[in-house]
Length: 239
Length: 274
Image 1: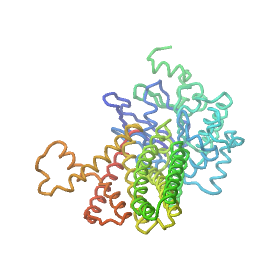
Image 2: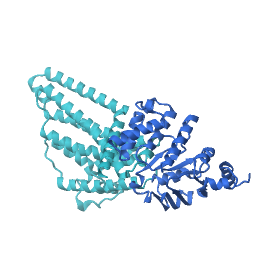
Image 3: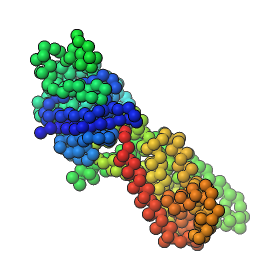
Image 4: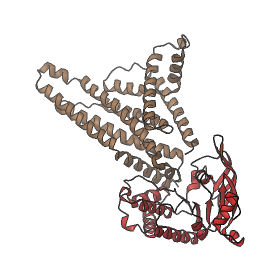
């Protein structure tokens, strides 16, 4: 079963095309990375997947439900590149709000919040307001929201940005643990070295077109690393 | 599923109210309103005490209270506009809107939870100002200022405040805070002017002397909710005046045009790219 199915998606901004006939499939339980240079159309595709924007042509399904239906977002967690929320919320308050919006309450909500706080090592700041936290702590709070709400698809836009080396390592470990639990992880990132280490599959998007979509293993089997492969493909230059 | 939706509504309404309650503008408006009401009534008390019996009776007349309530009504519309606009614009700021719309709720639910949450807050402010004013007026004049008519008027103003928030919300989806506020004021004034002009024209004379202003007036008169009808009705009820309007026809028009406006607003919100 596929977690995400993108079929023949076209999206333009006025006369400029952002995405041309994009087809993409993300299998359940995999760690998948969407890679591409700036302006490739990665954020547009993520916005389309969350129904923040509407496709001009084609269709997108999440867990076999068209994204135009709100039900498609049950079990989907999204964290933007720079997590931002109202500063008067406490860390626990943010997690409670996100959990409630995902349909949790009572004991399950509390236990998932405690789990998320522990996983991201932010239990000691649980009662502090966002306005009193550092950027890194706010980002960790945002990342912790993905563990609240029985989510089985985690969509993370540039998740490593704003994290210190410890935070990056923690996040990688957490994502691997979540994947081991059968959750699908969709990453949108520039940091190729990190992606090569944790991803099962990658897609490379450039100028709104998917240039490559396959397993990381298939790249390794060609005797290349992800960075060189990406560079050759996107810049169209041999190494 | 129904339990989940109920919890989502509750969380979104609470979130909207909490967000606006922390606004410095609201805190300032709340304090300023309280001070102005206390000051006005201290002056009233002073006037009553230092006047002879006839003058005191004039001062304590119902019209003075109605004047105060008219001021509160007018001010509440401004407050409704400010917070109706802010309820969405603050979500756009720093892209927090993405978080809300990535939850498993429809855009319609998002729209109505923001509108209703803002209405609860603004209407609470309105009730506070109205009731405080009535209480102080009663104390200053040794009379019972609040009547059943005032309570009915307060309910009608609740509907008026809701309509103003709806229009503010609509504009704030497209333009910034200041532009939305200007559009809101222009809309309210245009509806008011067209209504007062078109009401005195016979149906058969609508097509006579057509010019651009007349055409705009006719479009506004027929297709936009005549929100000033609600405030006029509230004012007439509060001051026990005879209602000269065709209440049945005006209410029917208001219901139909408001439903049409809500339908269009909802369609626009659902189609918008964020």
